[in-house]
Length: 367
Ligand SMILES: [Zn+2]
Image (cartoon, rainbow, N blue to C red):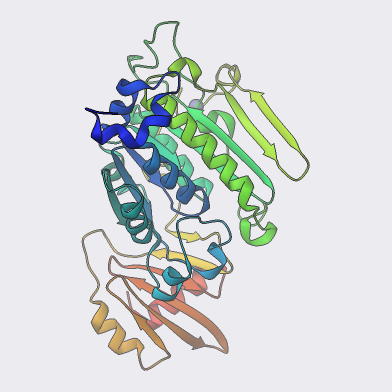
C-alpha cells in the first residue's frame, strides 16, 4: 500500500468489484446524514465510519438508557451512567474507530422547521427513525431536494428496508440520466400511503425487538448507501426487503410498478404536506414506554438550564449536565420523569397522553 497511506486501512474494501481507489475516494468525499441514532442508526454509523464515508452527520434527540445496550452497538454502560446524548456518544466512539473522518453530532428533534438545515449538503439520507411521521418528513425532503433516502425499520423479529432514488422535478438527477435508463424508484408514500394509527401497530416497547433483525436491516441500508456513493447504481436494489429472522422468511418484494398504480401526493404531485407543516404534530409519542416529547419553543430561543435546575431541585432528585436537566416529579399521585433540553424540548416519561405531558410541562417549567 506504499503511496496510499491514507487509504491503507480500506485495502480489503478496495479489492471489491466496483470499489478500487476511485470508489474509496468518492466515499471519503461524501456526506451521509444518519437520522436517528438508536439501533438502526448505531449500526449504520459504525459501518459507514469503518467504510470511510468522509463526513457523517448524526442527529438524535434522545439519551442512552440501559435497555438500549441490547442492540445499540456504539454504546456502553458508562454512557448510560453519564447520561450522554446518543448523537454525542456516537461521535466520541467513532472518533476512536476512524479518526480520519469527520463526525457532526446534532442533539435535536427532527421537524419540518429544521430538517432543511440538516439535509443541506448531504449526499444520502439513512433512516434510523422510530416513527412514520418523521419518515414522511424525510421522504418529502428527499423527493423535493433530490437526495437518495434509504428507508429501514425493525420491530419484533421483523424488518423492512428499501432504497428511494427519488423522481425529481426535472428528471436530471444522476440516477435518472444513468447509462442503462432511469433508475428512479417509487417513494415511501407510494409504498405506504398512510402511517399506521398510533397505538395500533407494534412498537419495540410493546413487541420487543431482536438485535440481529435490526442489524441486518441496517447493514442492508449501509450496503445500498455504499453502492450509491461509489456510483454503482446498477447494483442498487429495486425491491422492498422484508425479513422475519425468527420464522426464517426472507422476501424481496417487487414494487417497481406501484408508482403507476397510486396517486402519490409526494413524488407525483410534489405536494410536500409534511415538509410544509400541514401534516404532523408537535407532541410526539416516543418509541419507549409511556413517553411524550414536546416541542414548545421556536428554534434559537435557548432555555436557561441552571435557572430551571434551581427551580426543579425543590421537587425531586436532579441530574444536570451541559445538555439537559432531568428530574423526577410526583404530580397528582403519579410519577413523571421530566427531561429538559436547552433548545426548549421536553421529554415527559410517565404518560402516553400529550395533554398530561403538556400539563406537567406548564406546571413545572412554564410556557
Ligand atoms: Zn411517491
